View 1 (tube, rainbow, N blue to C red):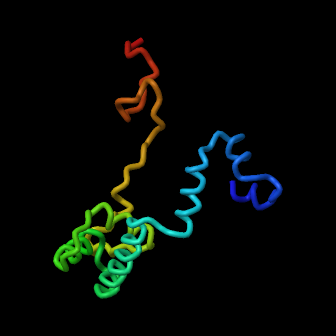
View 2 (view 1 turned 135 degrees about the horizontal axis):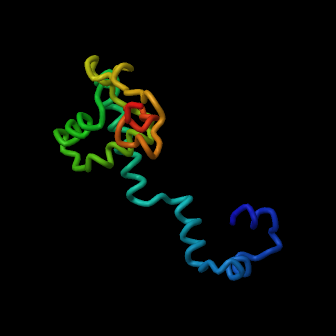
Length: 133
């Protein structure tokens, strides 16, 4: 939308919005949001700074549950999912304990491809009818 208006300044905003069936209030609210972020965005920015500090103080070990617990102890009331989202967006992750790593031997590999006749069992299909002749 903005690219269209910057490429063709002779077109007015109102006629373009009318053609696209977009209310003008939606467009102007969107433009205002670019310059003035909402309260939640400002809070997210502040929380991300606190989360980074806690994560760095732990040596990069703390994941979202521990970071959430530290925030709760500091008196910051925030949900665990919000902490998870902010850590994910900031590229922060905790380190797993040494015993919690999955082993490559733990993943099963099929011996034969599953088809309609052996979908419930991995045993080989019998070809003959079973009668001794």
